[in-house]
Amino acid sequence: MIVVATADFQLYHTVLEELRDRGVTFTTIEPDATVNNGLPDRTSVVIATPEDRVSLGDRDDIAFVAADPEDPRAAVDEALAALRGGGGRTVVGVDPGPSPGIAVLVGDTVVAAFRVPLSEAVETIGSETTGEPDALVRVGDGDRLKGARIVNDLPEDLAVELVDESGTTPYLGAGVRGMGDVLAAVNIARIEGEPTARREIEPTAGELQRIKDESRKRSAGDRTIDEVLARRVAAGELTLEEAIDEHRSDDSS
Image 1 (tube, rainbow, N blue to C red):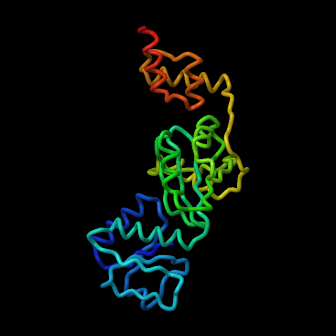
Image 2: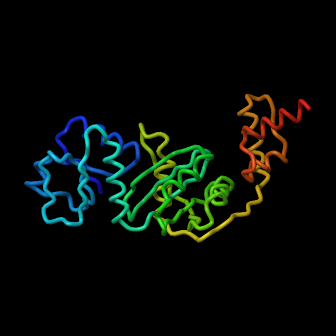
Image 3: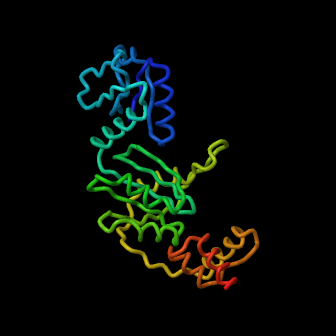
């Protein structure tokens, strides 16, 4: 866990904002409290300025990041690098969908979280696993077509497991809309799955119809793509927008 222990007002708030944006687990403590009461037991990294009166005690397992108030992002980058270096295997959980939730865990610690368009999912996973020789990606099985598209586009040398995602999406209270996919990704990352490589998926009639229906919504009721184009969308050969454009082009030719 990352502990922020600084009396620098600007650094404190900018580092906390950066950590929240990345979905990182952290806590805060007054610098003097580290001298009087010590650090929390689960502390792995401390972020502070060289001027802060911070004591690590006899904890040689804790990394200290000397932060520059003018560059708080660099401090967070260094803290996450230290956290990944000593916490165990990097596991990426993915909750597939139109905007997949992606969570990066090192050991049992969440070090980063994202919710990105489907077209950016593989790139995001790649950036989080580069340089991690034993990284593992766990993909939920809830959305078969979108999950297969992600699995099939990942590098062949990256270990991938398919996870039964039943019960992974928690109840969300007021004020946290949009977080369900990310929290589900965290839970998926913690569940052992079945090793998988490329997935060959034959879309069902219902899945093809949903793609057609969505094309009509996206085109404001202007058109509905045919089954051939819907199959290409299902296979990841075309985005829905590209399929709609191709359908328009066929009509005008």
